[in-house]
Length: 114
Length: 112
Image 1 (cartoon, each protein chain N blue to C red):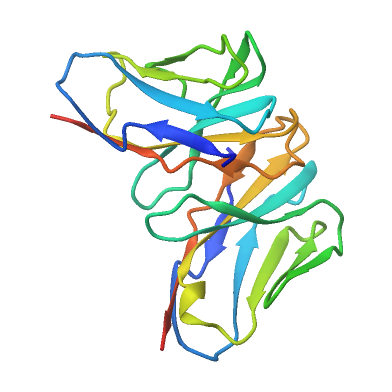
Image 2 (image 1 turned 120 degrees about the horizontal axis):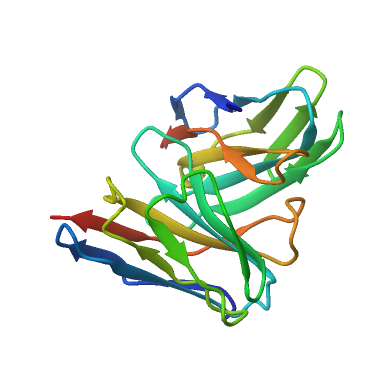
């Protein structure tokens, strides 16, 4: 089945630790995105990548890092510098760069910092 | 700061009722408007991507209209069914940034 997978579904982390969230797609999409959801707020863009080996900061990139070494993979690292990392994280992809294509979303990872 | 507002925040209707929600966005530098449906425990799924003023799109019992001059889009559901229960998200794209800016969503509950 084609789609986007995110792992793990739930993640617990101690304060001060870095953690990496996985996002993989087999849709052959060029563009990939990371969003964060907090209660009562819309999805906010963390980072996006329009092509392999290239990525740009979104609106709330501080405390996060990404890589795009392969077309199908776009992992997100939540670093200890992120002040409030507890949230629900969604990964998405779209066939082409540019935002007139619909985005396809993964099932999300809920990160809790203890 | 660009703001996308959705109203109402939540809605409870009976099965068979028709309903509609609003997405308000800045009327300048419009590029595209997306609608997504997000069911509990599932991933958001695209309903429509709208790009032209006056656009009307339809998928089954769900339709959407777009007014870029005044900065709003309506989503209509005709004859709501329990399976329509979900959070409906809209996302505005400005030609300046090329990024999606999401509203906070409208949560619809359809009672059988």
